[in-house]
Image: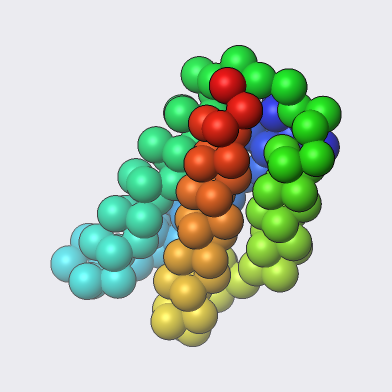
Length: 109
């Protein structure tokens, strides 16, 4: 995977989160929680975009692979707002993996 692939993958999840939030009532506490997680994920994406690094390193590829595995695991589940606990758990897993990737990238710079 390349840096661009990872940025696009995170962007796709941000879009999915936005669509899930839009389907919840503004007063729903789950909407607030998803919004907070979305902001954190957006920050991780922004940090990744700003970094200049070699995306061919084993460390990056391993972290990107882990993020893709979580992405594949939660694919389509974010839209299932009738299972909101699962949605929030999936978003948390993706955010944790994205944070790990950004931490790995920071060590490569």
